[in-house]
Length: 471
Image (cartoon, rainbow, N blue to C red):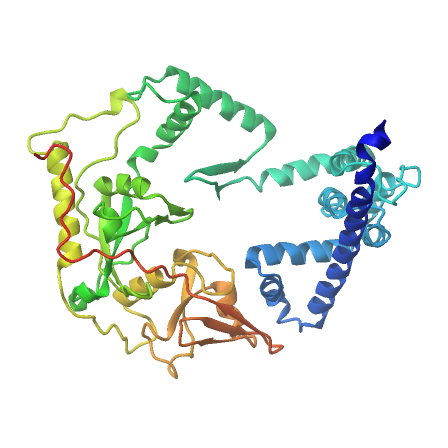
């Protein structure tokens, strides 16, 4: 009966198994080629090999560094490479085992792998080990603890020092906060969040249980008191004169909103720092509590050409999630007055005229206004695939100073590693379309195209939509 129902799938099943073996063998071959690339680099250039691996694989430098680290770790475990070559294990199996042994001493790792890949382990007719990656990981984990319990305790103490918090963008305007902590701390934190959520009284009765837990967690952290900065992108044809603002302080961008979106004339997406595109409603909801910044952009290419310093006056406050946190609006500060004040400020930004300033600096260090412009224009490090934010980058001279000037045409953001790479044989060159071409010491070139989005236009003589309570 099985043959009658599913006999036609046998060729496809065989092809999938063959592809799994081919993937394992190709992965092992890539490991050897990347290792050869690493060995070919001079000692002073090896620090930057991860960047070239990232360029070759079209991934971020961080992912390239992970691939290089995996390559070096796998090359130190010839038993795993041999098993990949033979098709005895697949790539997920090899990576699962590697994660369990790469931090062990060489003799300990060899003993654990010998146990996990022992001759008594069943192998299916096509050569693949008849265990899932999770099963192999569990076998290796138990073996590592059983073979040396004291070393396992020391590793756990060292692992606790790697605790931290990071963000992970999701879909549909959502994201995750990932906290690496001990299992006990995880259980305690979850219990505390659920308990606090159950004890709070919410102003919005339609919140789901998950939304209540998130709101309680953010309130406990004080996230409802965090300042927001909104960069309002306006066409450069109406740019303001910024010559008097050269001494302004450096600031951090939180959200970038095209002026047409801020005024409700467009639903194009905005950009939230550390996340990416968000929908127009989410962006507009941030504006009443934001410090506003005007950035003048080329309406055709989207290139940022000027940037005002922040206007540190706010038109309102974020809505508190809990009843006891709500405020009563005072005279002249009700919702309609706040919305009118915000709209008036946005209209002024969108319509005031002026000239483009010359922010060239005679010395090596750019002025605050020039640095602010470069930070907002580049946003992140301009090495291919690198997303290091502006606040952690150097303002690097493409042509070294004093041969190259300190101005917006010769400055770029570069993470410290890629800034230093230019002193070890890497070079950069700007192409006419804004693309930055990085060339490695071996002569291979890699391009970083500018991340620009032309803003939606504000048509002349556009009538603004009325406020909700306007007649």
